[in-house]
Image: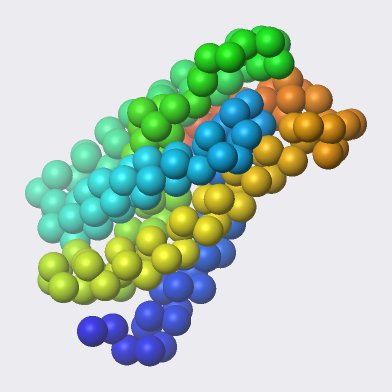
Length: 199
């Protein structure tokens, strides 16, 4: 069991990072914009699954494999950057059809993949989750319960933000423009990954 101070520190750190704009939150907002809140709310499950995989792998990498596989973090950052760049291009190219197309461009598979490659997972695993979370299974379960309790409502909040322009509630915000802005945000995150590798 984590101490109250450890759990509170982890919860505040997770909430802060989950609320920040990023690739996954941008996609959640874009899904809300395109599909509405009700049809997009289930995507928080894909986000949660993606973070479970990514945070766990990064945590194991940082605690166990970083000595013998020193090249692994760099390879994972390159893969993340390339995937996010591809996703940004895809969002930009489909923006013009957002108001006429009924296709769900952002589905569970896309959201899961984007979350697995989300740079925030590195921050969660390396700085915010207690080190015990990757050394003891009971501590991992406890950390993931805290994380889940925070992620679901924050993910739904981002979907609601994206869904707000639908139905004329915010008439000045055009869906295509919002999706292009989302594309730029995702591209910036991709670029930031390559920038940190080049330094």
